[in-house]
Length: 228
Image (cartoon, rainbow, N blue to C red):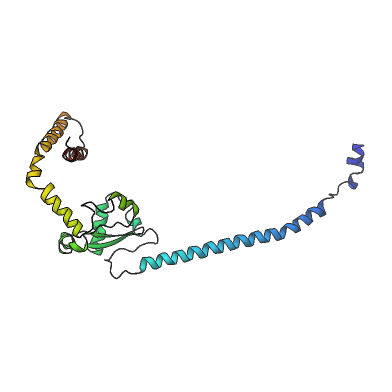
């Protein structure tokens, strides 16, 4: 019987009965395909419009209010001048080369943060001495900065004013007097002697002086502060 169907009567059974149904299903799927393509197109256009608006906002922000800033190299959107510093093994040489082109007072934009680069003694004297009152305050715009500096209440990070002057008066008259400094002389002598001893014991080997000096400074400050 199988031979009768598959061989003798094969022409009667060779048609595909579901061909019309499959063709109908394909036709029914075409509107769905068109809808999906339309949704993808709308998504692409919306994304492109968003990026275009964002790019224009970044360009506008990076080009506005430049009259009061020192000269500097051209900046890229979002990253600013980071591309001119990344990959340099000698950062000070890169800054020197930029300063030779744009002057001793130079503006660099690193991401969203503006930096003013001072590269001459005369300009440093102008900022640190002549115009010191204009640069004496410390920024506390972020929560992290306020936490680290105890909301700017320490002598190092306090805003310039009566409170800062009172702290400086206490430091000058109580903490940094000649008598007070001399009272910690034995601590400095012991710590320096210990450092010299460790260096002499390392004869013939490499000594990391930066690490030794850091340890010396930390030891003197800790013993002076906590009486160890």
